[in-house]
Length: 284
Image 1 (spheres, rainbow, N blue to C red):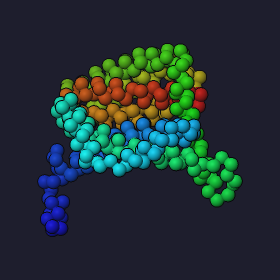
Image 2 (cartoon, one colour):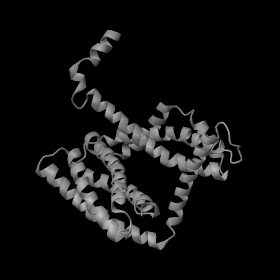
Image 3 (cartoon, rainbow, N blue to C red):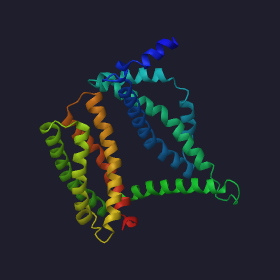
Image 4 (cartoon, helix red, strand yellow):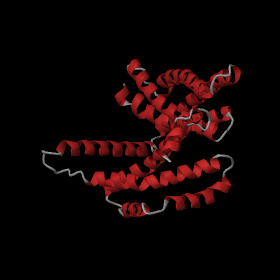
């Protein structure tokens, strides 16, 4: 058995093409990352809320009980439920990601709750105090950020900024698609490379318009703001490319519509990052 396994791994045919080992490993990493992001967005804020308020602790017990759910059984049920409602390769991809995310929620929720509960505000300085303080600061920062976003939805001026950001995003969106279409359809550039190039053009356009019009943050240091804006945009680009890869390379969807969906999906990450960090008080 071992010689056959070594022979399979050393066969050059298994290291190239769509079914090659590198491509399959990349697919698995993408699926795992997407499931982890979905699970973290659900479990970490909920765990912080339960840990800080002490309410709904039954959710933690329920999460611990959910760890006993058989993986294959859950995948079978979800596939039977979602599969007929989705066409193409997504009928296999989406149920798998949903199941992976559901299975990742319990340990993330329980771990976040346990981390908050382990912090003792009255603990004396000494061994382990620095680690507890670090954990407390990280938890408090995350909790304040979530609360800030929640309270910000009640201020009309934030909705005005969101509208302006949407207008700027629309210009960047169109510019992104135009550059992507020119490179990919006109010059036959690979869709991922075309997405990176169109991103660079669109992000420059968006930075200038957002700095001077949306957030009116011209009194801030342009270099620092540009660096932060670029960092936020790179993170959004990662979301863009991951979704684009799934749509084009996994689900075999058309490239231009897939890019349109991926750009729209990444937009909320851009707004929150730039509103709270790039052009916020700390960025000026």
